[in-house]
Length: 305
Image (cartoon, rainbow, N blue to C red; front, side, top):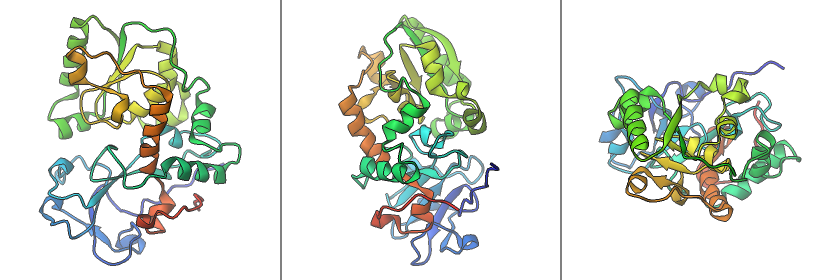
């Protein structure tokens, strides 16, 4: 089956401002009322904004310097399994997105029905996949079972070079060396540094996906920064240490806590599933935002032409 190219409905990466009453997230090219916003940091909050991905170029505007919270971030979902080839997404289309208010990674959500809504949508796509946990287990049958063989090894997971540079003003090499040096001093062996592979590679080869590498390597922890790998690792039962912004809520250990002596958090399943309700409340199917008013939070069948 030939894979169809999915329309973006916003023409380029970067910031957009709503200029009309049409609530659908589309710019004029696609029949909507959103226009490119070159300087979002000088908006007042009266206009609603969308940050569409990351434009790492001369038009970059730091979202952490926004003077108000009337904006959403659109990027890949923090539950990566939704984009991998599966019975609910056989063509691995980018039809599931992260839709986070006033943040790049999930800290909270304006909605509370994430688990029930996503489970309902998955069941519309395939009655044999009634829950998000079933989707994860379809791809990784060992999910939600803490890895029993623990050793004092760390898998260090980088973000993209530009993510390190633009968000943290540090090169990927400096960050990696700094983290490796500290881990070694703390008695941890860093035997693998996993650089972020392209989405094309991750979708075409299961061996390139993090959950498979975690099962093969069985590290004691992962260390990351600014990454959706947090959720994939937690699904695989591996504790997460994060050096920067993260989407792990109460389920991870921060780098500061870790180097000050805190044990890596081994999150119990009940707490993790409760946090996943927040994560899933910030997951949208593309049809929910480009064809409807997402603010109404009406459950929509996730079918895509």
